[in-house]
Length: 585
Picture 1 (cartoon, helix red, strand yellow):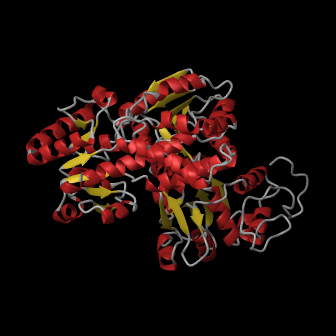
Picture 2 (cartoon, rainbow, N blue to C red):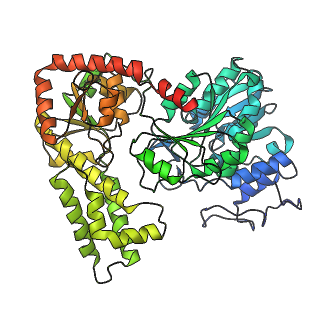
Picture 3 (tube, rainbow, N blue to C red):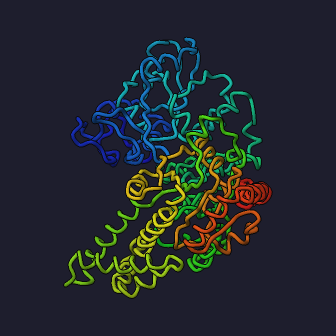
């Protein structure tokens, strides 16, 4: 740790304190008392002092909720999970630990397991690892580890420090956190492989894989299938300094990120590590621009029209790469009677309503417009009415996306002010998401006569209550439940985002991989990837969609034949492993 000129048992003035609960008791350093006391035991050792820094520049912990009437909750893939270990489960989780062993604790969480082992097995040593610096901070805030840290009975390791312990893993007693083991899948695979005496460190070809996006798990599995060892980079929650430490430890052959991340790009450029970014998720910010000297980073995108935009932004190596599917995860299932009663449907749509995003983006548009004072004499309600005119024009004809042009006509001065002031988000993309939500709700509602079943966010329940024949089924879990949904409906329909008609959504490929029959919006991209009418069915208008749904409900044999050919096409040409090979080439 740089800048430490004294060791006096205090951290006062050494660190900038992250956001915290200002009502809690604090020391002069601004840290919680027990946290400071624990950290002070690490002072005087270079590795320990670096660990202090890494813990204290953790993010602000918005993904963790502690306090109030609820138990501690951790946000994972959009859901909140309780992660405190109850006493009975705590004792069961460490029941096999023999006194005198060296325990490797996979996931420190709130520190209960480490504290319990140290208290009940006085001759054990514990190595406590976690990916999340904020959880390590919470553990040190809530548990008194001073004696164990000072005597060496407890060793803390964070993120890529795990790599240093893999060779010794067969000699450790491995203890899993009962919840975090589900979150840290890639590290768990490495740990279990090392415990079995698998690949040696010198034999590994590392890929640092930036976390985020709906395809992360599928891409991770595909990269491993190509013969690489994967280490996840928590790019959304890690400080760039933590990313740098991870990459310095790994020295990977390359880094692959889902969506371009300028902070990761900066670290890769500094360390001369090749970077490949795959633009997958819909975004409302402006196109990224490469760092100086990073023009040769490779960028792929799901959206053919974005290739030119990325090249104009300064990237020299840009390509179109459509989505793929993990066929080990998505495949046709034979459902039992209970599963069929729960998941089966004649007509089905799976996806977000986008309603919450639409409401938020409308509010942001109006607030930003007011802040720029582009129409000084116009009231907030009058601006809202002008925006509604644009949205109404789109509702009149969803066949063509005209909002960008209409917005320039109605709000040109405001849009220019936003560009000139360098707002990170593009207000036109906010409106695009509003229109996308309008269209999706309208198309799903139009199929109410067929009794369409919808899986997605709970805003669909509002549509279900207002439109008889739209049946909201809930939010399907991404694993087995979603495969059951994809495997069981007679007809799946896709309603793409109106402003990116050429991007093929992940659900289209996933449904086909499960042997499902898909009617998707027609596009040149669909035509290039599949034989329309033979491997997939498409529609151009809402009327055509209704006609084709009715036809295939009356002729299910035709639908099954198309679905079977679609399944074969996906397996032969559109697996995630094929996409991973392109990213790693």
